[in-house]
Length: 254
Image (cartoon, rainbow, N blue to C red; front, side, top):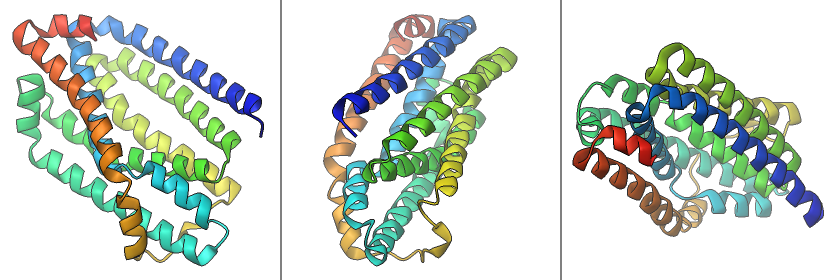
């Protein structure tokens, strides 16, 4: 696939994504700036925990998918290890957040009103981590067309769901849409993977290969530090504005 075609497909995907996000933000604006700030805290918390749960292995997944896919035995070892890493880190991160949900709620929202929604939202963490994992595999296989289809379908579906839920349930619906969208994303990716028969998950034995564990974790530090720093900065700025000025002003900043 030439660079012009690749760039065109990427441009279409980005344009659709921007349009959907603009529509969602327009609808979300009706909940008011204060509630929009709360939504921003939830959104960035999920982004932070997703990065941690993936352990920054994205580039490693792409690299070793490309290298091992044609060697089925080696590919199974790599995929088994990658799945275990994502599953274990996703479950651990979810349990940690649920355990300290009241403390996190007080830190981010200055109350425990959203503790239940926080627990529900964080339970979708593993789904979005595996969604990204599947997209990274497509990247490694250079399946740009399928990657684009999944991304566009997911983006449109998330827009519809977000707009519907915020219209029906206000801020609670908008927050809940984060969890619902994460699960929908995963289901869409699985559907297309099964349709194209790219991976037969049932044939894998979920065993850990130490060599690929070491190789994948070798990608972690730089990737995690960058994304975590960015997301923590957003959370810190928004929380500081809420503390010093108010949640209305934090929503305006958002």
